[in-house]
Length: 433
Ligand SMILES: CCCCCCCCCCCCCC(=O)SCCNC(=O)CCNC(=O)[C@H](O)C(C)(C)COP(=O)(O)OP(=O)(O)OC[C@H]1O[C@@H](n2cnc3c(N)ncnc32)[C@H](O)[C@@H]1OP(=O)(O)O
Image 1 (spheres, protein in one colour):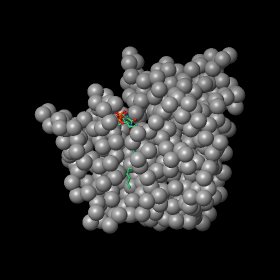
Image 2: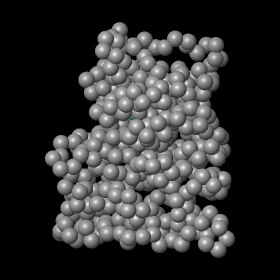
Image 3: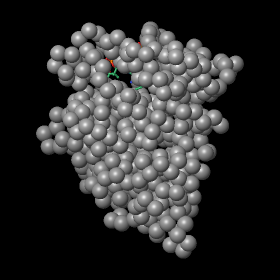
Image 4: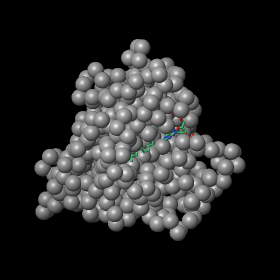
């Protein structure tokens, strides 16, 4: 969620000392955001749409007199607009039934050809159909929140936006929200102000379900991030990553030294490390709920959510846990999702196989060891790269496990909910796809 939406790839340097890599770090602090705000004002950047929305505005940064919580109260349901917003006359709304193979193919193709690219246009996210079905049909999902736009004449799908329901805790308040994702406008229809109409339409349909808040991520700066995170990349197949331009050979490095630097053991080291199964859902739910309670913003998962989001689904999500060989207690957990990117314009390779760190919990096994074991299984499963955000406790293992910082940022936002202070990435316990 996500980025979910930052760059699909970005050059990571390979040097024999990963600690050497220095990229301007963004700590998500108030100062950093104010700096960025000043930069964008000086560039004359206005947000004609976002200035009209109930989101924290740049001008309010630093104003601690405004209380934390909803920016606008809910309107009575009878006052929520009953008809869809107007589209330009050549286009019409469609609700996308993700159960339908045909519709799923159309959504897949729109995103495959038009969704998020890195800044240099070398890679584009290629979410699989199984992944889209998983991401869009969690417990309690609303079909009406899977919104498409078609050209009236050709019936071609040209734009898309989605929401799924979630319970998200902010400090001590648990709020029902929509997680908004997969906003996409066909490349030929860009810059025509279609995105604001799509956002207003999804907002209307969320309101009709009596939900008034949302969470989303984006690679672009909008008013106003709750926090700003950075992707880190751990090479698993360095030769391919260098060949396709995802990373560069570090100074004073040869290919063979680089391959050796990133080599991993053939098998995992933690006794009791195994794949999560259906029977583990109650124990994993307890472990995860307890772990996530320490973060300022985090999802509140029940057993149905854990079964949906974390029980392994082939080529979509992988989860592992540590079961104590002595007392069979489940003490640790880790997971990643599968999100390949198309490699644009390379003769030899068409797909970059990327794993994205999802939720990880360590209570007995050191997190560093747990994540090293995950890297080993990801390598066994033939992933080219393992990506992780600097959220939760991830900073504690990134450098040591030879992750390098990416060059893009992922901003997290809340709609119609004001958080008093910007968060540090390590205070965030939420991963959007
Ligand atoms: C209570 C329930 C509430 C539910 C809703 C909660 C909010 C959900 C918000 C959505 C969360 C989405 C989460 C994801 O999926 S993030 C992934 C976004 N998708 C992509 O990056 C794919 C490739 N790009 C595109 O398809 C288009 O460029 C998009 C569709 C992104 C914009 O189309 P286009 O380039 O043709 O522009 P326009 O002329 O129509 O419109 C320009 C306006 O749109 C604002 N814009 C641009 N990009 C984004 C963005 N990523 N989030 C929010 N707003 C964005 C922009 O600042 C400007 O407004 P303002 O600056 O003038 O004010």
